[in-house]
Each structure stands twice: as C-alpha cells, then as structure tokens.
Length: 484
Ligand code: NAP
Image (cartoon, rainbow, N blue to C red; front, side, top):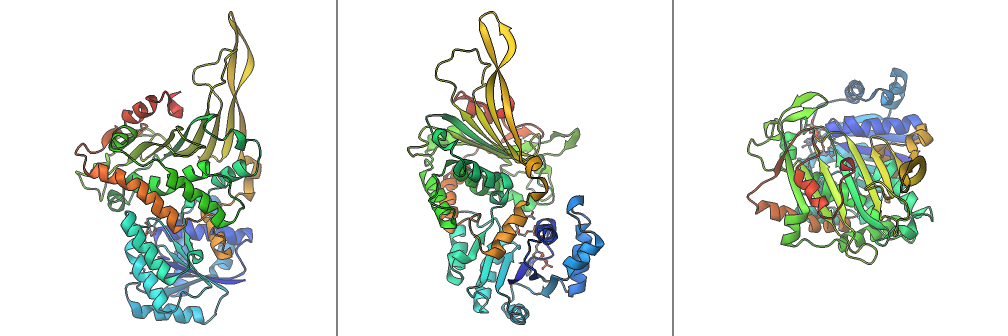
C-alpha cells in the first residue's frame, strides 16, 4: 500500500519532537508501509535536501535510543520531502495538489500540526482544492477548540469537507500501551468484570502529574489552563475507558458508542458541587529536585496577574446503575513532585473482618501509565508477625511490569497512532460527539471560575497541589495514594 503523509507544521516542535521520532521508530521496526512519502509543509523556503538536513539535526536532540544512526537516517531520509506553502493563502494549495497528484498514493494522510487558528481555513482550502477525496484521512491535534462553541465550529468545518470515518482526532493518551492494556484487562479477561461495579469498588482515582512547568509555552498555556489542557480530553478519555460497558465488538464505533454513554451519564454540576468538588490551583515558587523554580506568574509569556489554573482536582460521579454513588477523582497539575500518571481502583474492604488489617489497606488495583507501564494488584496476606489479639495482615502486591515483559515489542503512543491512521483504524481516536459531550460537561466549571473572584489557590512548586484537594477527598473518608 502506498501512502503520502502530509505534515502541516513539518518544521514545528510537535513534528520534530514527537512525530518524526515516531515515524522513524515505525520505519526502524519495519511496520511503516514501504511505499511512502512524508511531506513536510511550512512557510520556510526549503528544498527536500535542506529539510532532510534540518530533521537530521533535530534528531540530535531526541532521546538516545530513538536516534537514528547516520546509515539509518540516510535510508529514512529518502521518505522525506518538503513543500513550501502558507496555509493562509488559498492559491498555494495548488502546489501541494500538484505534488500529491504526481504520484496518486493509495492513502493520503493530512496531519494538522499547526496552530488551531489555522484549522478551519486549512480544512476549507483542502476541500476547495479537491484534496478531500475518500482516500484522504485528516488528523487533528489538540486543542480542538477552547469551549463547546469553538469545538463545534471546527467539527462543523471538518464535517462539510470529510466524512466522520476520515477524521482522526488524536488523544495521545489513548495510544499509550497501558491504556490499551486497560481495555485488554477489562474486556479480554473474565476475572475483573464481575467485580467492576459499585458493589465492590469504593472509588477510582486518576492522577496525571507533571514536574515540569510551562517551559517555552507560557503564552499558549496562559489562555488554556489545566482543565482544558488535560481534563476535558485525556482525563475524561481515561474515565471512559474505566467506566464504559463492554462494547459488542472491538470496532471503533462500538467502543466510541460506549464511551459516549459514559460522558452522557456524568452527573451535571450544581453550584454546590462546583464549590465543594472542584479545586483549582496555581503554582508559586518552590523547589523541584533540589532546584529553585519560579512561580507560574513569573514564567515567560504569562500574565503577571494570571488567574489560569495549573492544577485541578475534582470529584465526578457517573449516574447509571453500575456506578451510582462511586466517586471518580481526577487530579492533574504542573510543578508537582514527579512526572507520574496512574489510576488507582480502590475496592471496598472485606464485609466482615476476622483479621486485623492496617488502616487503608483494602484491595486496590494500580494501573501505571507513566513513567512505568504496568499493573499492581494490592492484596492482604498473612505474614509471620503475631500479635496478642490474633494475626495482622500485611499488604503485598502482584506486580506486572509490562515494560519488562514485552520490552522491545512495545510501541510508543505516537507510533501506534500514526500507524493506525495510515491503516485506517479509528479505535483509538475520538469521535466528534464524544468531544462535544466532554466540553458540555466541563463548561460549567469554566463558567463558575469566571464568576468566582477568589481565583486559583496557590501551592508551592514541588508539592501535591493545594491542601483543599486533600480536604475534598478526605470528606469522603478517602485519600490520595501518597497520603496513605
Ligand atoms: P510550532 O513549534 O509553533 O510549529 C508550528 C508549525 O506550523 C511550524 O512548522 C510553522 O512553520 C508552521 N506554520 C505556522 N504558520 C503557518 C502557515 N500560515 N502556513 C504553513 N505553515 C505554518 O507549534 P507546535 O508546538 O509544533 O504545535 C503545533 C500544534 O500542535 C498546535 O496546535 C499545538 O497546540 C499542538 N500540540 C503541540 C504539542 C507539542 O508537544 N508541541 C503537543 C500537542 C499538541 P513556519 O513558521 O515556517 O511556517
């Protein structure tokens, strides 16, 4: 199968940090279809050779194991081409059209790795130039809009030019091996499904922590914030994977129909819930790994009086028979103590205690998403220790390290997703109705914050966010993992 992958924004940060290394890995693993071209598009005046040299230079900044040797790059470079083009100029689409028509590949992938302000114009112009034939697949990166209205505007524009099955909305969390394993755990094994419900599960916690600040993206982040950047998309997709009903098969729409039902079942926000169950924070100066780091408001590109949240913790509920009354806690933030993403499923304690058990030591399943990828099942076992009033149980855990077990077979998130786009598999991509439903649920939070003069609570960089996040969960008698 031949393919042309057009990388709009082919000289940008996303292209060289994520997409090129992922494409190179697929090339190295022999999974990238053989007869392909990768066509970078940007306004720079580059020829193919200059573009290849630029990308080779950038590979020098990529993680060592993922860096090509000069021989490997020389072979990979044969795939790379460049088309100079300004997406805001309709007449320049003809140049791209000529490049694509010179070869007529079986599949054409258009990857919009450019600022979202260019999306609607670029999509409209691709259609006007006749570059929306059925063999064309459109890949859209976040952020897809700023709120429900702007998300709908993008989706409406895409819909006028492409069928829904031609549109691949990336949520790179869905490409992570651990998330695919969550689907495998739930729907490929009979063990967990019978207990995967309110009768047995006390609460579920999703943590997505970063120790980094806003780096060079202060101006972008200041208009976005943690709720839009992490919760509306990644956290809610994880929540769907955890809470959805078993789909009737593994086809994209069967999976996406079930995820959509979860989003529709999320309990809407009342003013009282917003006050009690949502905490927003912003980092002040602090220490990370022994280094002093500045406050968010002192970062380059950030308004010195910014009220943008760099931390969110919230308590969601899913109003259906399986999950009624079970809290789903979501917590994400920047400048937290480490880079760590995990899900903790806390099971209810044994209904009748005949042993002594340490406080908070009920069964739990921990799903590690990053930096490690694996599963831990926490159980209670009989150790050697004896007490006067009987035996005390000791927490132990079964530890499945997927990195160790599957090692070199593992495929990174962007590599998986890019291969899926080229092959036309939509399972790990988000449908427009899912996105709109997610925006509908988060919008009242944004509106509530806009009308709240208090602004975000400050937390010191290097800590787990404002103490109100611990107080929120403690009101339910629960605690975050590091507080046990
Ligand atoms: P970036 O580094 O600023 O790169 C933007 C790219 O777009 C450059 O190649 C630029 O090249 C090109 N470009 C800008 N205006 C253009 C125009 N009018 N016509 C043609 N090309 C144009 O941005 P980025 O960080 O790669 O981000 C791109 C998109 O991905 C954004 O929507 C961002 O939010 C999203 N995203 C980025 C990341 C990430 O890790 N960076 C992660 C997730 C999502 P020229 O200026 O030479 O034209």
